[in-house]
Image (cartoon, rainbow, N blue to C red):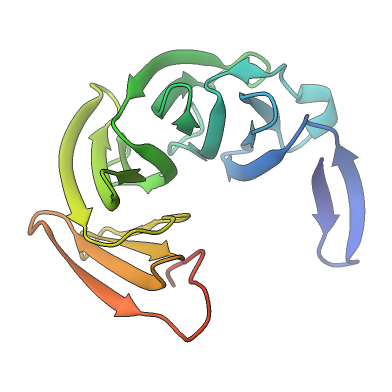
Length: 205
């Protein structure tokens, strides 16, 4: 389910049954998107009336692992770990009927994605060839603009992008490091983590 919570009263306003195994949720401009790992679909809805506007599931891959709405809420990206690995670009202008515009396959297993330097660019993390890779894609053309290979092996479960520094921050549990990958320079730094497994997710203030 997806739960709508009133943070003033700390109460659940409604719960929406979206399907087997929802994993990630993104909201922009009153639109929302959720990936359903259990059946390989994504669903969209209007946050003003989620239950009434919930779309049917749209198949994107065998394992959609991450979703994000591009600025404006008219398009979205699904990061697909399996079947096929890569990402799907979707038209979400009609919240009741999202449409897959294109699916770009990549080598490796993608895990997470976030916005890049422009509104149409996406930063994606993958495991490829025994290493973590941080990739920058132009979604309008499907072109891989840059790839930074990081000599660590773990699970790049999240990513955030600092546009001012042109740097992607990637938590890699398993290797237990936080990676800072700088596009343009093509370099990266590893920040050793604590004496516990992690980090798993990261955000910027």
